[in-house]
Length: 426
Ligand SMILES: Cc1cc2nc3c(=O)[nH]c(=O)nc-3n(C[C@H](O)[C@H](O)[C@H](O)COP(=O)(O)OP(=O)(O)OC[C@H]3O[C@@H](n4cnc5c(N)ncnc54)[C@H](O)[C@@H]3O)c2cc1C
Image (cartoon, rainbow, N blue to C red):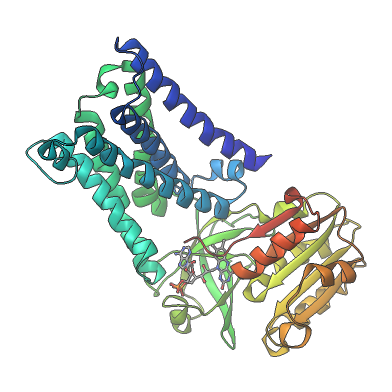
């Protein structure tokens, strides 16, 4: 249901743009004439609509998270809409060129800078977007650098706004369409301004101090205590965290403690340039947390039987869910699968064993793939005594989640009974 609201919203925005565009054509006197020019204008307006929505989806406004089924899904939509917007906007000048040919001189001004400023804004917008996409698709950059290439998208939006507002078109001529497009651009601009300039200061932020750090192989456990206001969260949620002394980067991490504990526990696997620096983190260091976000834990609402499948560091949200489960009075079956490549990597094996022994109905399965092979639906069905009427929650490497989700769908598990948390926002 939640995913539907977001999807309905996207289609509604596109429909309003389409209706206003056709209305503008009908009210213009010339009626609807199907030509390259018509298609080009339509593509540009639909592209601008998707581009605006894609900015809104990266804003981190919490109130829209639930409409899309969680922040990770919002980012997926953000990428999808951004990509589609680019394809549509790219066709805008291409179709104008087809309309202009064989007049090469006119066609050229849709591709390169000329003395016509309104056209130049459009060209600059498209090239800024293209640059960002090249960095995303063709160059493999560390996440922090790749994120910086997103600044090109802010520029693309600025140039697109100048193009739309200065060019003579249906938008300048037909007031309802103009108002709608200005509304979309304002929406996108406020999303960019909030995310880029205001979020750090006015987002939902909490000050904590590092109380204790512990390292087990390439995994750090960090306990944090609040200096003032305590962050409230539901089990399975995550925060964006910035640790003092480790630069200004903000990274997402699941909360691995119970929601009623006095401290917050974050568990981090060393992966890239940021997490490598965790060695320098000392007790007493200040940390800022923004959140809480995510709807992964919604899968555990109600009294349904559950199957939890964690791959490697994907165990973190389940630790919080498990602590919470031992403290509630629900009576149900939960099968917990902790998949690791070998038993030595099962850093939280003892903790899960201890917690799952605290309440009847909790069954723990350690699944080292070097001994048991990859977990598949056949094995799941056998070990859990069937899959029907159970909700299945997954968090782990992308390949594992994709493979298991498609196997579960083939085995007849409905999509609405599968919940997953994706640790990859890129
Ligand atoms: C909702 C969510 C919950 C997560 N929970 C945990 C957790 O509990 N424990 C844990 O170890 N890891 C968790 N991660 C992953 C963690 O954020 C990355 O491993 C970490 O940011 C890696 O940073 P890096 O610079 O060391 O590595 P890089 O090599 O730079 O990044 C590796 C990958 O991490 C992701 N990433 C990096 N930086 C960011 C960022 N600022 N914002 C969003 N994604 C980023 C990207 O997918 C990137 O491809 C979570 C991610 C998400 C999205």
